[in-house]
Length: 111
Image 1 (cartoon, rainbow, N blue to C red):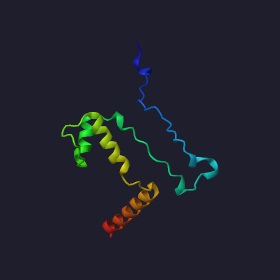
Image 2: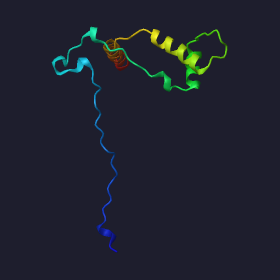
Image 3: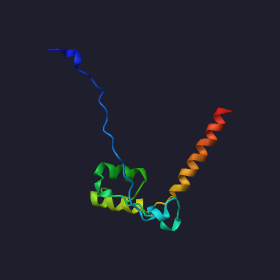
Image 4: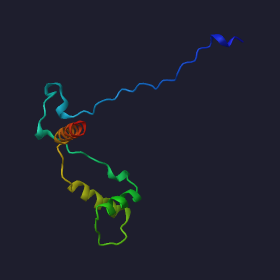
């Protein structure tokens, strides 16, 4: 058997196309425009979290309960109420603030 004609190729990762999630402000007529009134409320499925994760969240934010040993359902409802009560952030402002801070720090350390 002649092995000199066998070629070996480096394995490559398959290319994956990522699709953008559809939103009402992503229509072609509105592309590139930002309308602060059309903010979509983020939905998070907390039911997929396990009891240990709910406990960590509960303890981290010092959530209180009448029951010293709440069930998973009570933990879930407490975490859900706390999570939904948190301040909504303007994603665009957060990104712009991050970029501004990164540029400022870069100029401080490069001078």
